[in-house]
Length: 401
Image (cartoon, rainbow, N blue to C red; front, side):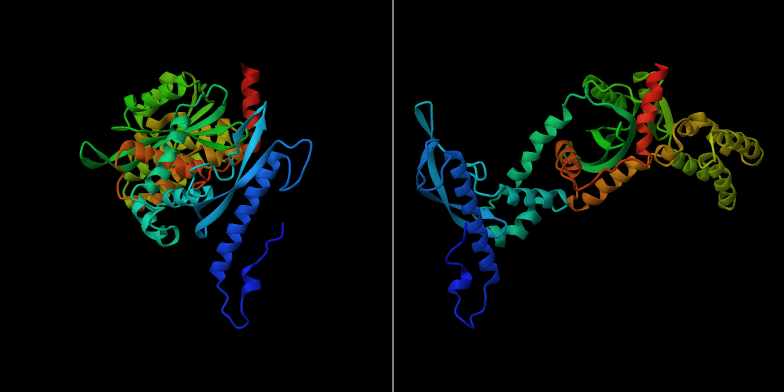
């Protein structure tokens, strides 16, 4: 449909072109054309067209002020009635639902700004000149952001019985949350799953008083209660409470201790002049040519360091062969499976994106925002290295079963 009476046609030669005005006018016309076409499809006829299959009739327009990406605009909203089974009903646009005063794109932009780390007050202050006072009242942005809560609740309680996760990464990060009238740094426990296609998926978020056995048991009970089946492998740090909770919930599950965390423990027990030598010996364990080489390097490390620094050897023994579980899997996946880096990167993004928040007003607001960062693509999750061979791991497991 051709748009008539454009700004260009009315412009006087030599007059400065109002670019923003032209953009706003084009957007208004585009929305009105879209609404007209939507109504024509619903009625089964264009304006003035007479057809046997006509499903209703038009009856004028209604002016409604709507905030678009180019600012507030007065739109002529077409009206119509749909005939159905001898009765008629008022036509409702799906593009611009009744009573909606902001376009979905504007609401999405506000939500993305909030999820991107801009707090509610700054969103309001920044967009006020564009959207106007009437459309950004004191609670307007908060109501938009509040839409996240219902989506979060649905995610947090969804059925997991039809989903299959081969690997799980479990770890916690600390966030500043107001609790019992004080702002405190509390652990946010996170679970990251890897599907059979190798794609990483955020499975769970929970604020806890500490990273204790009881706290992690609560997380695992929640996942099991929603139907999550035992994974093939769980990758975690050296938290004893977490290891115990996993072993009790899923007996026989393979456990991989994070090799990066263990190296930090070893270095903390040795003087600095020993660090280069210790790192070389440890790298022979964690970056071997094959599984046999990893086991030989492990035994050699213990023999050597028992005579140099017994506390270092004892620290390695504490982790045991859980440090070498990654060698049971395809070599292409070793980089992804020997550390908790996959979930630590996610936690790092959470911390980076929430710096401007200061502190969260409560536990719920913290979880909703962190989940929203992933759900709306502000933080993206890619497939693990060697994802093509995850199917092989599952196939081998089924053969054994």
